[in-house]
Image (cartoon, rainbow, N blue to C red; front, top):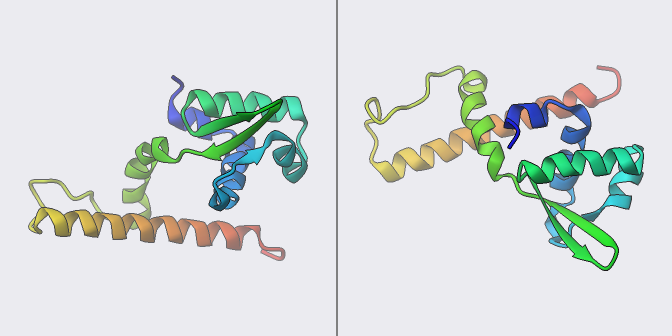
Length: 133
């Protein structure tokens, strides 16, 4: 399997992941033709990138006749999150030796920290895409 950082290094693949994340609420998935139309990229190009994302387990596919519907499978991004969060948060990662919280509290704090870092990153990304910035 390709290194997760190599997989997400490509801008088109990140755009596909973002689109699938945004459309993920209905549980039906997003068709290749919807991805093509939304991103303005050719069908062969989208299919090539979806294959890479499938091989990295970042997307799942549901076949319905001749149509393929893709959904985001974000679990492999945990490795990226674990590597990136200390840079975003500006703190050293909490280790078992340095933690003074009970396990349940430490786990909750970790989740809150990750959510805050992810939210901060998402908001910064939105502002960077706004016209006039």
